[in-house]
Length: 93
Image (cartoon, rainbow, N blue to C red):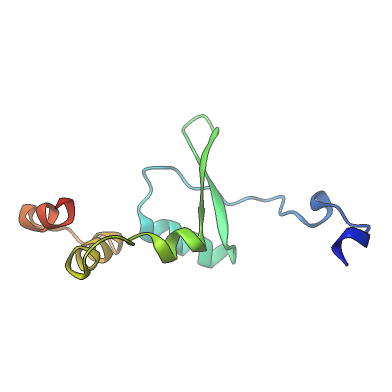
């Protein structure tokens, strides 16, 4: 079906692209994705150069490999909460 399509990627792409900076909080990035109704967006540096991508898949997997306790603290950080140094140590462990 797609191999017979007459449309190109350029025909369907989003032209007003939402971007995020590497130092943006995860919460801000998620809010922007939700507001713009996009499932992913480029991560750009201060000069506008793409340095990566952030996708829904990344968000679903972002704390894989961590213990439940570490994941709990990571989720709190993503929500913008400030944590005590003991909590940071738990995440780094």
